[in-house]
Picture 1: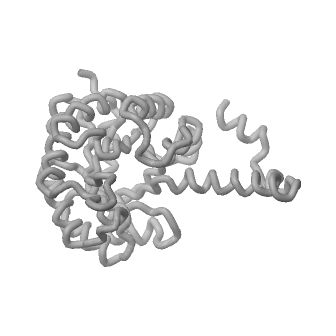
Picture 2 (picture 1 turned 180 degrees about the vertical axis):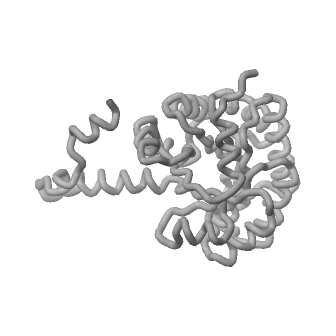
Length: 269
């Protein structure tokens, strides 16, 4: 199998320093981010779902795979695929779906441990670990070298327990995750604790608001920073603000703040 050189590039990015991996929601937004100089991109399950008129976690496996193919084929940089929970519960199902995902051209894939059930939001510990191990084995069998990120979702699904989050992330690291990620951790102390617990493996931190900086996270030892659906939210904020003005006031001031048509056209020429 011929390995995409972007996979090696992606792995190198995780070896030292700190980089931002922003999250486009379609090919156009992905190409604009590449033009701004970002060295890698990550898909966003929420941003993509919104383009289909659905809430997060409501796309199908085939839709997600098609999205990965489109983004990966549309840009020259590495792309990490937000694969939600692997579109399966049992480890065998996760492995089969990860095999399909790594054949789409992505350089990385993430698997999370949330169930989608508010009453019991995290998979049982051992099942969650086995799911990561199954994903690792599927990648190894593929021979692609795709980078695996293990995610623990407690802080964003109503279980903000740092001790349990660290227990899960360290177990995911032992099960073969190359990068560890706990969306929702925000305080410097919590972030530093996660970084120390899984070292020397790299940690991704989600930044969806103005609570930190790249420099501060780099000093804490974070290797990768993503923004999830925040850029998609920012785009929809501008869109809805201008549209509401038209609907409610019959004026068009918001449109005057837009980038000129010619500038956008040049970006895609």
